[in-house]
Length: 402
Image 1 (cartoon, rainbow, N blue to C red):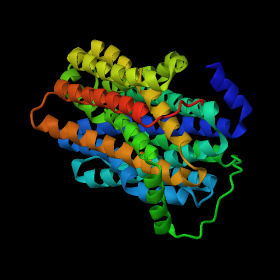
Image 2 (cartoon, helix red, strand yellow):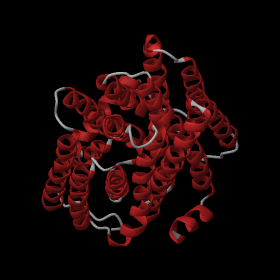
Image 3 (tube, rainbow, N blue to C red):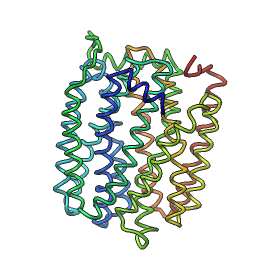
Image 4 (cartoon, rainbow, N blue to C red):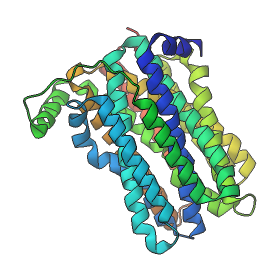
């Protein structure tokens, strides 16, 4: 923890970005419980739950080919402020969803809200390698993941109780307030990044990006590796678990909040426990551990309290895998291409998450048990371990601190 505190003390830009990130992500997850509670309250089908979960990622997929090019051409502070404004208005629209007849509006508002959130994330992750390198960059990525996980924990847990006692609409109002506070704080951020005014238009820059990926195949491999983390898109799975197994045990909003926050505790603690052991070789075993954790969750699913413990175990390895694979990619890119390649990386990751969300809903409606679905997801991480083992043996991937 001291390493992260030292980084925040030594870099004012990272400190402000991290503080704003804490508020923005807290607001995002705070309203997420309200959205899924609303869906269960409206008694929608498993397909609708899965579709909403899919929308959380689909927006990022569709905009990624253009977002990276825009990031490389636009002042990051101005872009971040604009994206927060979009999130404010999209969240405001959710206040008017009360019946199934309004579901198309719900889909639209979630699409724009998550498009802005994804764009915000990509902009932030493109900025970090421009101001940090090596071990500091890895620490910043880990800190970013820890903040995300802490916001996830606090947002989900508090929202579960908040929605239970004060209602869904009040959760959306609090979410809007969080974004307004983040906007005000971001106004004071000073980012001294030189923006290259490219002569090429957006489509020429996109073509240049693809040529760069072709010249640098390691980047493509690392993007595909990071995409395995899209298998952790569990929102639809958790909502279906609550509706199917725990409705008679605990209130819906509380069950959603506790399950998500339990996993998020693991997301926060994981990097603190594992970072001293990290290397390319050890990451192979962490992929395997993630798969084993999901198998355990599948076996524990019928018991709510045992499922809480299992979900904590599931979260223990995710943040480390996410931050390590992301840092490997960042260190293997030329600065000119940061925005574009990071955006394409996010597109692959979000495509994986979108597919995972869709398949959870599709398989559930076809009679496949939630336990079997969880086992299939766990198997994906065993494949990821084999892929990374092959990659470090055949492609000579350097360690992060080399």
